[in-house]
Length: 144
Image (cartoon, rainbow, N blue to C red; front, side, top):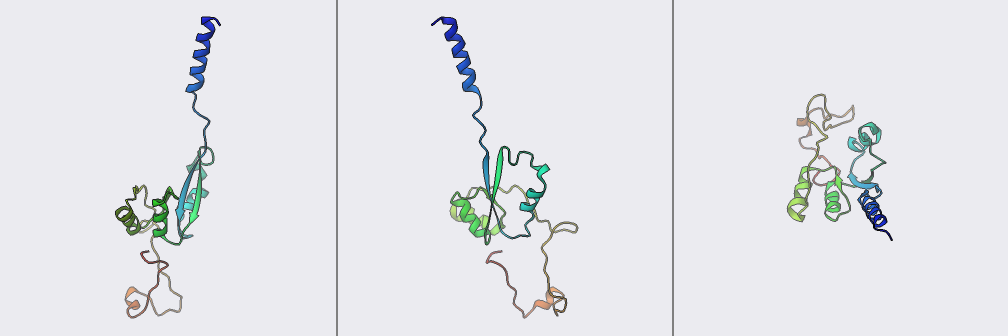
């Protein structure tokens, strides 16, 4: 083979090897809990805010019964991220060495923003927090 051909072959081979590998769509595994969590629905309904969704990455949502099981899934490597409660996230960091980052807060306790709400039936005698004295209050999961 001629020296010129070998040089051209080497340059072409180097150029080929420098090309990025075919882009493989990444999957981001996201944990969520209650249907009222707007982050999942915001992502689903605001595609314009996520122009690469379905092109370079996709999101796989998994629903959980609470934030503590999501921390366990993150520790086990079964989730990449999740909506979290501060206590569950702190327990994961302290007890299981979970390396996590808080990237957003989607609940704001101020007028005009989403806030935690409490509801009673129209005919309930409970109208203020003081009216709860002597009654029982239930939550969906310990630590929520």
